[in-house]
Length: 253
Image 1 (cartoon, helix red, strand yellow):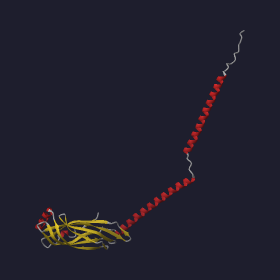
Image 2 (image 1 turned 90 degrees about the vertical axis):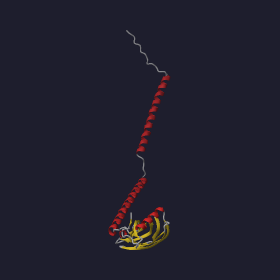
Image 3 (image 1 turned 30 degrees about the vertical axis):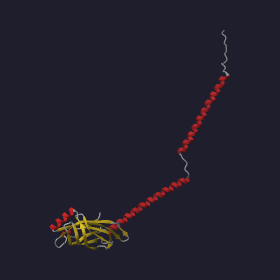
Image 4 (image 1 turned 120 degrees about the vertical axis):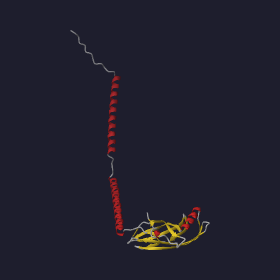
């Protein structure tokens, strides 16, 4: 009969038990730290995802937004009203550009020596300032015109500011006198050729400032510019060609 020997379980060394206990304790500590980190992460994410806004900040933001909306609405209404007013005034008054026009001119006297100097020149020029608006008065200011021969100034024609009533005209009559104007070589040749042909050309150019007044409304100011050539029969009676009368007019941009 066989003997059965019972062997007791191996006994762990006290040092190994201590190591196992310590190992288990360290694992538990790591697990607890991981749980704490996860809790912190969830709290941080929740705080970032849903920031806390105080009631007074919400009220202030909504007030600013409504103020901007109201301001933009008022500006839009103002622009519409202003545009409608300007359009209505245009339909009622139908303003037209005032302008200048040469209605008559005459070269009274021309003394020219062969040295290339205009010793004496006299010319009569009538410039009409016209306002064809039936409902609006017009003003003319800073009238500054120049009478030239072949690019050289012979005389300046100016006028003080004046008004022209609606549907009317105001004449500007100039008695131009010029003395001692020297011409360059090309001007001398042009004058010799003109006197031989019996037709002396003089250029009139310049500008004036115009403005309309329509009731309580005042329109913008505009420059009206004139640039044309007047042909005079000289030597002769000195009258201007018929084709130059009432055709030398100013233009506005």
